[in-house]
Length: 428
Image 1 (cartoon, rainbow, N blue to C red):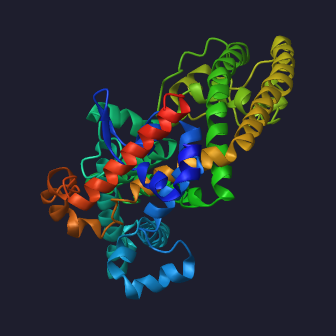
Image 2: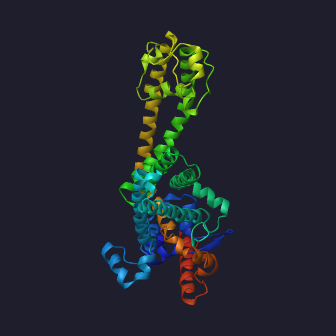
Image 3: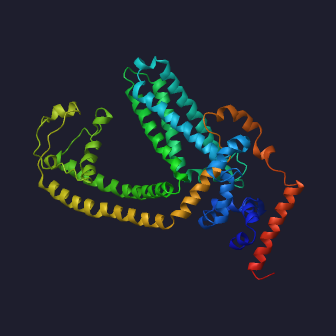
């Protein structure tokens, strides 16, 4: 690749997108490298220049001449992945503003009668529907002219789910759909559940918006670092769950012995939350010693019939010196060992990502460019959806390889690649 790039830069760049069938696999070099996580190939200067060409849709890769091309070459400008990327997140930000206004003021029917609230709500629904369709297309690759072309649907779906940001996208859609059904099919006077669902959905949407910075050279590696640290944190939480449960059960069994009503009453009053509560918050240095040593006898009762009949009434704790002893050992273990362990894991991840930040960022950049090569911002895509499925790239929109000029250029690049490979192997 280095030799080809030095000898004939232009053809080496174009060669990265030339599709060929080798060992029964039909793909281009850049796509094959991306699908098989060949970070060095994707991050190579030759690959990056090919990405820039695709990102700007063959227009000038500078801001001023690129913007001027909106007048001189409007078709290339408005179909460029960069233009669609910027416009998509402008629409996304507009949706977030409307969604925030709706959640803050108009969940209850008292305010819903205002026409503007209806506009905000239904714009969010239309935007969500359009964006969800784009994600389904991305998952199965049915409208792509390139990328993942040799993979079956199952392989494409697995690759799609491997991406952290795609999982965040799916979570936001699931929450939005759940909130929609709760609001319109589970109606109560206060709309409390619907409000919580919409607010949680909006929270995830704001986290999704962070993806806009993934294309930025400085902030992109930071987001990659956060994503990798979340993986470390998940591993830590799996260990912590068993430790917290074990310690919590010991606390509860000795402070409130023979407690029969573990699962009685409303789910918010289940005793499992009390079991988890004390050891979990002790991870953050919230000791709650007044409850663990049995000295706090306020707002509680020792009459069994009362706390058994009403789970919302607290049972008074009993004193047990072993609970404090176990708490001391647990605090030593959790605060000095587990917490410092996760800090060490974060430090290792930071150094690893920092060392390969440029490669990782360039790899993620290709993901964005490849997606926006065919993606249309929501909800505008709903207008073009029937046309896109009728005129599918796989049916009639692929370039004709038999075109004489293009065929000769592609054949030259293939010969150029073969000759370079033979020279490297000293066979020519």
